[in-house]
Image (cartoon, rainbow, N blue to C red; front, side, top):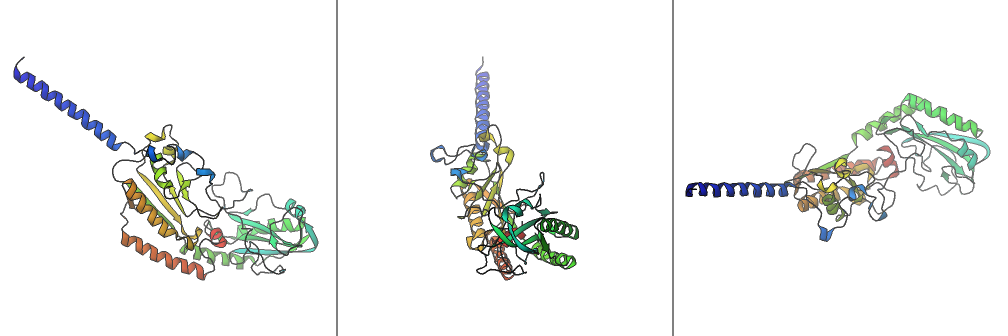
Length: 367
């Protein structure tokens, strides 16, 4: 064999070895990043496990009698609002969980006291009128508070309410009529006499409230995109947990909870559900995730936008990513400042309308 042939063979071997080494390097470089085993706070499959340390993703109260198969479950009227300090009369003034600001309220007068058990038995099978939640409250004869009927208690009056608007739109004539039918049936069952507001007036009020809500609703979403290597679900989980996020109910979702149980989360973090449910999540490649904030659902005092902005910046730095909007446009600091200023104006407007963000009324209206 000539020296030239040997040289070519050696050169060919070196080129082949180089190609193998390069392909191996590229594969490793593009492989999903894995959580640090030495500092692992969540297992690699945590995206499909129960919430961390027994914590549950905060949720709004939902109607247990909602129609099966409905894609949307509206929150019930919050029974934990402060009650009046004196015995109120069944009028249009604010009381209990119902509020004339966002509800149609029909007082139901009684000839005598009605037990909570009888009232519960008289409840409609589904407490909804179309897409709007319906609530029934009784005036407790013992403590003078408006509350959802409770077994063993006695009530001197009732009130039936339906929400004027939510994110599905304004209360319409058909929904109002359905509300009247359900309220009348309840009143008949407890031997009460209902008094209904004028339908056209209430529908007009619902449209005005819906116009205001539509113009002042805000749901922010930042997208964190990987610069180079993709991320595994465990890697995303590990970095998010360091910022206080916990596993949500849905695979591929995490939330930053408030300090008060049962309240909506401050920030949501979500990525591909199929990646979280893969047989081997460690091999799932995630190239982007979304950080979201439902502005009217979170109290202003929680500084949700500041925390959203800080979380996005920290994750981008730690995970080698960039923060963009939904169209892939880079979000710079100046843009963030403008968004923050606009949100402050939105908060002021909601406050002036007696619908401060994070309040029970705002959470119901913007749901």
